[in-house]
Image (tube, rainbow, N blue to C red; front, side):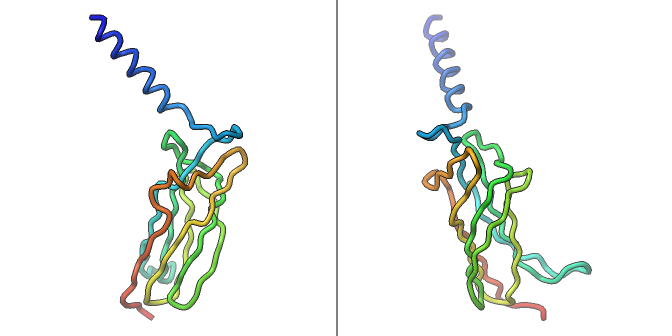
Length: 137
């Protein structure tokens, strides 16, 4: 009986430690990139072809981080550029580009939010690539 009580207490402590936000040395709350995704969005009656990049930003409890500024670097079939986009209520920063067929690559350079610390080492994935073998022009 005592072993069961100790096990329950130990599990409760472990759960409370995991559920509490991780704080950095300076008191900021930690955030990280949980996923980077590229997808082709085909032509529709209301928009042209495009590639959408999505960066998912989460906190230590895997909850979405809203309002974080995500700086990304795009490598396109005909060039390269950087831009900063802000995460939505779902913690997703979205960016759209189109350069025709070829390879698209999106890399996260930085994530910034007041009172938060971007911990790149905790990020599962910070880049994605997609090849469009053809385009409808």
